[in-house]
Length: 499
Image 1 (cartoon, rainbow, N blue to C red):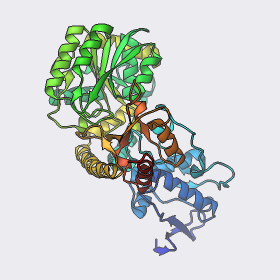
Image 2: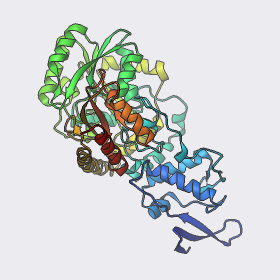
Image 3: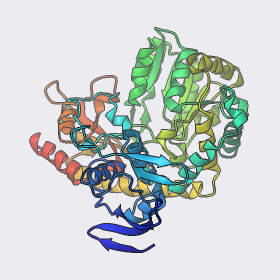
Image 4: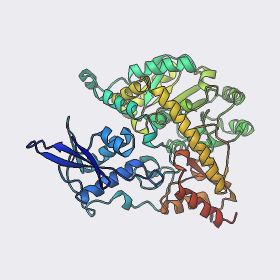
């Protein structure tokens, strides 16, 4: 096989499978722009679609292997797999077992709206699909997911391939209602080493953390019950609590942690059933509770007899010295919810609930009523990934990337006249804004809608607060803030409001 560079393409001469003649296959070397809005996957899909439509890649042309494409274009294999999968879904590519990927058809521009021609909604709310799907062409500056190329490429891909080799006997039933036993055993062992002793049968696997919150609300609350949440706090949780007919009551959280005077006052009045808390790397502030505050919160829960649901999905990105409510309480009245969305991939959709043995039995009953079991294939993939040798190194690299991105993000936001609501301890998020009072005529939601028209997805403070925000602020994902497009938009807003 010979290879030359010609007009921006790598040209390989491969034997034609039909008659043995040499056939030129043009492998695209794409001009990818990492500062451009949208993900690398979006850019690759658009570029290959354009090459096919232009006739540069004819029907029947064999595409480069995942590793070859990744090497030629300087991207991760994980990014290439996701791009190829999306092109398979649209029918532009086909795959043959053991042979690779081939161009299946030519799609005229009028046949299907291209990603760059997607019509974005005129406004967004906390449950807008564009904040979660990752397929929009808009810059996801307010999203809750990291770029696919930030994760360990080979570890995750190997894990998915391994999971697909599930024994035939395991395909006969629905799987264990608690979740894949081997993963629960590993999680119990890991929690025992790092935080507290727990048995595998005290762990229920879920479709991510939000599914865990849903099961807990279904199990422990009834319509009309009062549920305490941090204010600001996780945006989807507010909608979920209201969906179950419960009444969310906000407890202020700022740079110094929870406001315990308000907590005591509202607990006396409302008699809450439970409270949701981000102990470490709070979403959206990025702060962590001190040990003293954690002890005081547990004392409050004991005094007013309410459950604490510890949202612990950022634990692996936090400092080892940070407190754990579940460890301090011994799972007497604390329920721990974990997830792998931030350290592996949100696409795997595997989370966990760790609770007392008596509560687990009821959680499993509700889980079966709501959907029987969870995906053993996904759970096998997670187990393989987190037990692979490169996982710990991948996690350290991810933390380093976030630290670097967070430092540059803070600088960019300050240059745009914005101040952080709190100094983050780590993790993915910075919440920052202007000191401008929020009014019906001028607020973060209105600015977010304007940003959407400019191709930028922002998450305004209104998404995370029960009461209207007093000032104009947003939650930023540090992985996507290194963008001149975003910086220019924010500076323009800053100039407009007269600061």
